[in-house]
Length: 165
Image 1 (cartoon, one colour):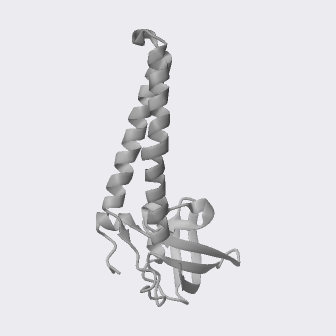
Image 2 (spheres, rainbow, N blue to C red):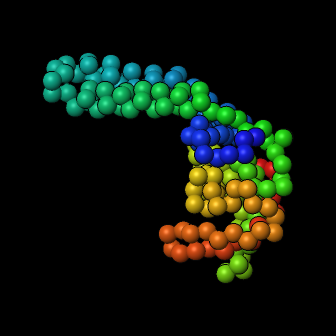
């Protein structure tokens, strides 16, 4: 696992599960969704005059968006670096680790899974290592107290436990 976290290609680090989910999404878009959009275009063409055909215009916009999304996913998958979760050390926080923290002000425990930016889902406890909290935690060890500046002020966390994701 890379120790430096400054290279832009590092932003494409992801878990094997996340990579596989992205592959499934790409496959769905290329097979199912493309056919659906193609069908919409055919139906709109059947209405006749394309110069004033709102259905045709909408279907073409949807097709352009779909092709853009497919291209983006293909590029991200091409540049993805899958995290070797078996080889992860739990001696310090790194991408792929689950971190249990104690909010020292609120005396409450929180848990985060540190991800690459493509898998980030803060509402479900998955935060990017490039986020304010994620980047502040990277490299710290169990027992460390980390002060993190966030939009609403500064949070002090004590690292209680570091686990493999």
